[in-house]
Amino acid sequence: MTNLLETERLIIRSWIPESDAEQAFAIYSDPEVTHFLGKSSRVTSIESQRQRLIEGIERMHQRNNGTGSWAIFEKESTTIVGTILLKQLPDKDGLPTQDYEVGWHLRRASWGKGYATEAGRVMLNYGFSVLNLPVIYAVVKPENHASIRVTERLGMKPIGRTNKYYGIELLLFQLDAPEE
Image (cartoon, rainbow, N blue to C red; front, side, top):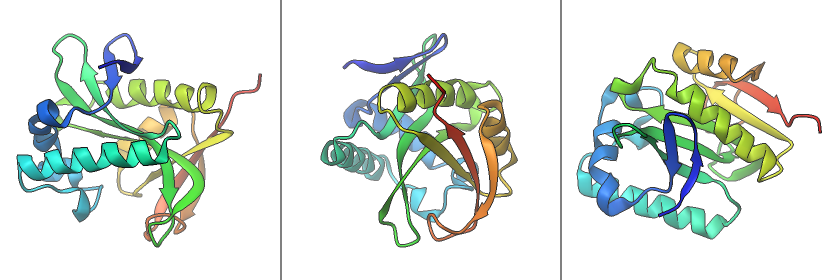
């Protein structure tokens, strides 16, 4: 299994459903983690989590455009600390738009350690330098102050509120590709 990206403290790699489902379930069965993600993000068993990971990998292979969702590992402990994603934003009906978002979901024990910012920074760089995206967005529920702070640390510009994605009102943040 090759790593997609690395930082000083983190490894970002593809999910391995057989070995990662239990740790992923611990993240996505925590109501405090899924509070801002919506009911569809909650899982009820390790097996349903494993199936969700398999389906996510299949979607990545079908898109075949370098986008998706990856596991974030802490190098020291090899613990999965969360998920980092770079993918097309869905419109209000769930259909993909031409806009791309960066996002993160971390297990509660990993909150406040700078992992979301660290993983977000390397994922933005990947989106700009490898995928040649001209702009990357982040969408955040207005009451999710921790994720708003992450977008600020990533240098993303607040655009305002939008109902364009996911069929709900979200705060929209934008970062343009660096000038060459």
